[in-house]
Length: 339
Image (cartoon, rainbow, N blue to C red):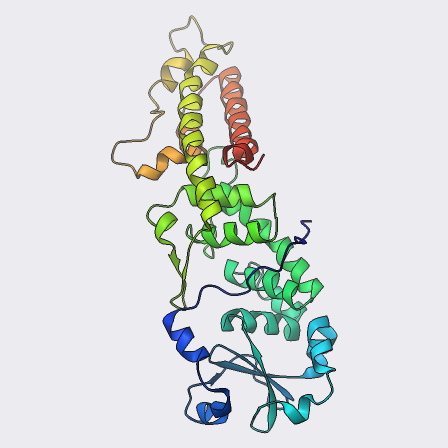
């Protein structure tokens, strides 16, 4: 399990959109009026018997101090401060605590606190945005079990970025994963020193087009950019990936030629069949293909598996595919300047 960084706690929310800035500039003394005018809307969870209201951006959450105190050391300390009831602003006669976090992340965090096992049981594979919320806010509010659960679930996203050896079948993909999410994953991994996830996330970033520089737009309208350091790492990795792909594809036929083909001398040598499979991307293909040797190798193996090769050549090809794929993943930290 990856351990969180001992560095300063990273930002807990994405860059604010112009709408967020307008919300944050709302005079706090008018919070009840804002709620009445629907400028502050109730979020989930909103529990009618709750005795504390948390406000993040323009969203309010009515919850219980006792529940949050049991799940978070930060909230426990916060609610133990004398005079909270007397000196806090109120909405519906309930004390208010303002949070600087993204409202959607707060909703995920609170839902996980309240629903516990049921929340995770009904969300076998959480969207990355929800996992990020658990990691960030679990760390910030010292809710260690949620932080650890988020870190555990992050491991699954490595396979979404790197894929798995396909051995003749289509690589599985997750409907909850978008290629642009690699930016969020890379920034989070860098913030928390998740050194086993960062290279995979940066590999995913290398496959992006304009989003690599322009950033990715989130559902709330905010734009997240790759950090300058991570962008530098991606540009360095791309040059290595181009060379690696060229090297691997040039060695493919050599490895088959060196195999002890069982059909050699019988007019059906396996090498002749493999030469018909293109080893370079088509000119019409996306330019990002040249930085994606893993997918290029997967495509080559998928085509090769459709051929009827002898046992020796089939094993040679499979060993070559597996070894070279593993080498790319192993070398990514070096390509990015992390090793």
